[in-house]
Image 1 (cartoon, rainbow, N blue to C red):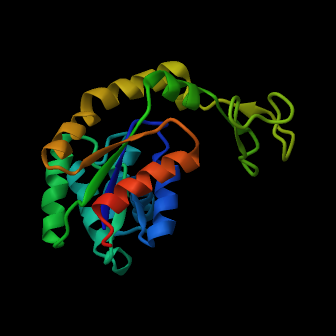
Image 2: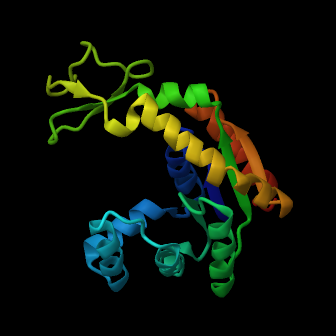
Length: 221
């Protein structure tokens, strides 16, 4: 069972991905994690990626795909995988299709977690993080506020809002998603692989919808 998790920043892909990985005993494969692992382990691919990163440039798709191919060819992906963070546009989707074909694999289902833009802004803008790096506790002003406003429950240090969680930055990221990533819905719909999921509700409610979609498409009776 090979799944793609799609959706804008703040949709909850990471949370649902972890739950699905545990439920179906298949790995959650994040392109960010793959990149950090290759750089951290000093692999040949990681060294090449690091050169781009140190220059402040994007890691080329070809290099990312090589990392994905290497990761999906590992033994723990033999029964399936959940890919989060790739593809981000139709060109990447086409390249991924070729890469998977070389591994005798294909996408079984592309799940898109759908959340209105105003709710995404509220979710992301409300995040706060402890300034104490050794603590690093996270909060949300609406969903998980600290006991004392602006102070960490654990170490009492001040909380702050990350730069990429500020409203202007979030709106810019959502615009990029609309322009580049949203067309993937059409791409996978044309291939009868896309299933949209209502991303409003509790984590459990959304997980039930996601699991039902997978059971309907991928799980044999």
